[in-house]
Structures are given as C-alpha cells and as structure tokens.
Amino acid sequence: MFSLSFFLKNSWLGIAVLFITACQPTAEKVIEKMDYAKINPLVYKSLKKIPDSINVGIPFLKTYYSNNQQPLFVTENDSAYTKIDTLIHYLSKSEEHGIANSYLFADSLAYWKSQLLNSNSINYILTEKIERHAALSYIKYCTGICYGFLNPKYFTNYHYTTASPDSNFMVQILKATVSCDSLATLITQIQPQSAEYKKLQNLRNVYMQYIDSIIQPIPLLDKDEIIKYGEHHRSIPLIKQRLSITQLLSADSVPNYMFDKQLLHAINKFQKDNDFLSEKSIDNLTINALNRPFSYYINLIDCNLERLRWQPTALANQTKYIRVNVASKTLKAIRNDSVILDMNICVGRPPKHLTPFLESKIYEGILNPKWRVPNSIIIKEFAPIMIKGDTGYLKRNRLRIFYKGREIPHDSVKWEKLAEKYQPYSIEQDSGALNSLGRIKFSFPNTFDIYLHDTNYKSIFKKYKRDVSHGCVRVEKPIELLLFCLPELKKPKPDDVKKQNILCDKIRLNLDMKPKTKDGKKYLDELMKANDSTDFRMRKVKIYPYVPILIDYRTFDTDSKENIRFCEDIYGMDSLLYHSMHSMMGDSILSTVGTY
Image (cartoon, one colour):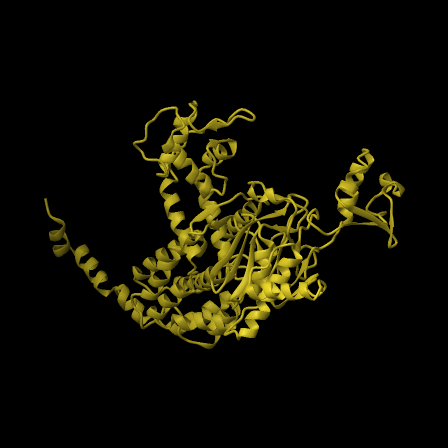
C-alpha cells in the first residue's frame, strides 16, 4: 500500500497540490499586502448609518475615520493585531463590572480576529467589521465604565444630574489608541477606583463561587412565631446548612436542632450584613433573606456598581457635603473624604410618599420650627380622625386651626366637606418638644417642599422599618448635623474661635441645652448679670458657605469599619435598574452603543 507521501511525490495530482499550495500567500503576507487606507472609508460609510445621539463618541469616530487614513485598531504596523488583543482583554473582563461580555462583543472580536489571521486572501469586509466593532465597543466601554451605561434621569424619582463624557474625554480616549501601552493605561485609569466599588467587585466574585450551590428552602414560621436563642427548632439544620455555604458558620458545626452560641454569632453576622437588627432570635425577615438565591446578591451588586459609576455633579470637587441614602435609611456627613457623622434617618413611605432623589444646598437651620400641616395630611389624616369623634386630637398635639389668618375652634370646621378642591384652612403645630419637626429643621431649595428635620418620636431610629414619613427626612442627630454645617475655621484666630464657640452654645441654649465651651458659659453668665435673655434668642441659623446635599438611593451601605451591608430595596428601584440594564445588553451594538 502506497503512503500518502509517496503519492504526493510521484503522482501528477500531488505535484499539482504542491504547486497550488506554494503559490498561495500566507496570512502574514496577506496582512502586509493589505491597503489599510481603504479601511477607514468603509468604516465611515457604516458609521454614517448610526445616529450621533446614540453615544457622545459617535461624532468623534465619524470625524476620525473621515479625516485619517490609519485605522485605530487594525493597523499595518501591528501585523499581529495586538492592540485588538489589549481591547479584547479588558472587554472580556466586563462581567467583573456587572456588564455582559456579549454586550461589548468581546468573544465576537476574538473570533473575527482569528478568522482574519487565518485567512489566505485579503478580506476588507471582515477587516472593516473588526475595526468598526472594536471602535464602537471601545467608546461604549470607556463612556459606560467611567460615567455609567445608563443615565439616572430616565428613571422615576431621580432628580439630580450626573456628569457625562465631554469632548476632552473623547479626545483623550482616541489618542490612547496610538499605542497598546497607552490604551491599557487609559482603560485601567478610567475604571472606578473607590473603595466601595472595589469591595462590591470582590463580593461579586465571592458570590459567583456559590452561584451553583443548591439551597434547600427554609420553611417560613407561623404568624408571630420566632426562634429564640437556646431553643430547639426543626428548621435549625437548614439554617445552619445555608450559613455554612457562605462560611459564616463552620462546616464542622454540630448539626443539631439547637439555636446555640455558634449559630447566634453567625446569624447576627448575616443580619448585620443585610442591615437587619441583630437580635437573639430568628424571624421570617431573616428566613426570607436566607432563602434568597445567590443570584439575588449578584444582581444587587451589579445594580449598585452601575450607581457607583454615576457621578453626581452636586458632589464634584466638594470636600464637605451631606449624603442621604434612602434605601439604607442612613445619612453621612463627610469632610475631606472622612465620615464625620453617621446616623439613622426616616424616609418617605412607599408607594405614595417616596422621598425624591435630588441635589441641593443647605442654607439655613431653623430652631424650634412651627409645622404648617400640608393639605394632603389635613384631608386624608386629620379629617377622618375628627369625623370619627376624637375631638381632643388637635389639642393634644398642640395643633391650631386658622381661617383667613384668624384662629378658629375645631368645631367650626365642616370636616366631612374637606377635599382637594376645597380646603380653605391652615393648621399649625406650636414649636417645642412635641412638634413633629422636633427642635431643628434644615432648609434647602427644592420643588418638592421637603426638608431634613428632627422629630419628637426618637425611638423610631432604633427600629428596622423607618420608611414612615410623608417624604421628608427625619434625622437622628440634628444638633450634631447643624454644628457640622457651620463654617470651617481655617487657621482660626482666637477671636474667630471665640465667636464660633459662642454661636454653638447659643444654639444649645435655644434648644434648652447647657453650654459646653468656656466662651459660651462666660457669655451666658454676662447676659444673666445684665438681666438680658433676649440676645441669645435665635430662630434661624444662616449656613454659609452652603453645604451640598445629595439624596440618593443605593441598596448597600458601609459601616464604621467600611464593611459592606446590603439593604432592602424599599422603593423597588433595583428591579427597574436591573431590567433596564438587561434590556440594554440585549440590544445590538449598532442600535445601542450607550445612552449618552
């Protein structure tokens, strides 16, 4: 039997095959012979079909490909197309940012590039396809990873502006394609660098390890039932199994039915990580959280990675500001990147009284404010109470009724006739300890007539459910927050320090608190000796320079040790954002290249 080598050497067919093979150019020679000047006009012709509104970078790409002969990525001085490899490397890691690889065409670019390198003929159509998609994916990645792939203004309840990529940014990223080194450097630099972002990414990697874990559902408890520390319960083994998967509980823990000390430590850590109150008991709130699939946390993280990419203009270049997180029901006062104050708050009750997400500047603190009751509360809450016959309600709460500026008795009001189109009365609550606004109100311009304020119901801040207001934000530490808002003394002179101390103690005196500083005590003593108590009476504290405030929504928070805590999506915003992101990633690269 003749071997194949013998056949190729001795037959006329073999000679023909060898001749044809020798005449065919190699892929390297094909790439060298390609006229790269023909590629840009082809790319430009395709880009002309894409509206400029799709992405801020589209007009810049059109200008580049119409004015230059050298492609950005598939270049003649890069015969191995290593620049494409650099881009593919970063695009393929986009899932670490919560963005699907397919949305950025990472796998497609790698496949098309291998086709081109293995081709034995010049293929301008494929080359143009690679160049165009590489350019589109590049600007899509850069604008999205730096400024967000979606814009919050398209979501309900968002009323603040975020930064968007400008011409300087686009010029910078196009210049970075000149060499592979600068391309890699730029992509690395524009990725979010905050500690919160990095920690969420790390947690995402952790939960990805558990994504295929099988969790046997834990049965919910009967109404009003809880599992107390030290008790035995049929669900304890399943609870321990769930906690052991994420290594909150040691895998060698005793598999019994007892709520023991080891389980208490693990369940408290789980409760804290999910922003629940840490207690010596397990209720349905905790069991529902334990039953969540790990994909729940991955989706939650992806939503918040996107939120962290948004750059609110209100906080740009600010060293002192207040940030309210409606979802976690917390407020942080920040100075020079350090959290000076961290407190619980109360926010608007869904679905009708959502606290709006907005930006503004606090310009004033009002001491011992009066509360002018909104019409909606008079009609929907006060009127039903009065109609039912609780005539002492208004008096107990120090509420007074006015008609055309004149105070009138409650029994002169025809409560059953009040409606949105007919509500001629005003109701005010006297200032003082019983006032619903407490002792301090913080004013900032906004179209929703909301503000930050104290409350006479202090115990609410110790509860888990704090979405209870009509939209305003109740703060746990109003006095500390007002003092934070006072101007910073940079290289203060003794007189400046004295004035600041006296101001702080005048505020305390007006809130029925004792002065703390020597300057304040001396000032008060002098007033008492002069028998003059009017000089320290204050109603308003002007705040200048104004203190920026951002009321935002993130379903995570950080504690004093910068540990991540997840929180409930009380307004359902995660669901909206998640579905919008997946809808975006399901579109083609030509129809959706970004949203800016």
